[in-house]
Length: 47
Image 1 (tube, helix red, strand yellow):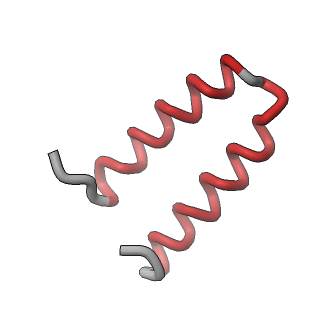
Image 2 (image 1 turned 60 degrees about the vertical axis):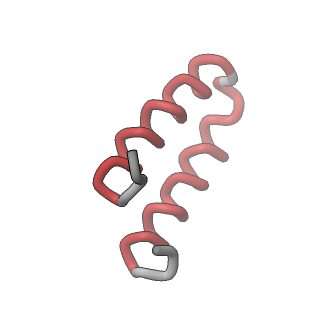
Image 3 (image 1 turned 90 degrees about the vertical axis):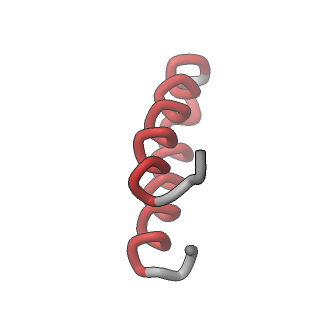
């Protein structure tokens, strides 16, 4: 399975969801990191 933008987003959502359940204190950091990564992917800075 190769990772691309179409299957990276649901995979990241699943991982972040599990991490939020385990560590609710890190919710803000996880959401911020996710948004930054998705933004960089969308702008084409990360391929």
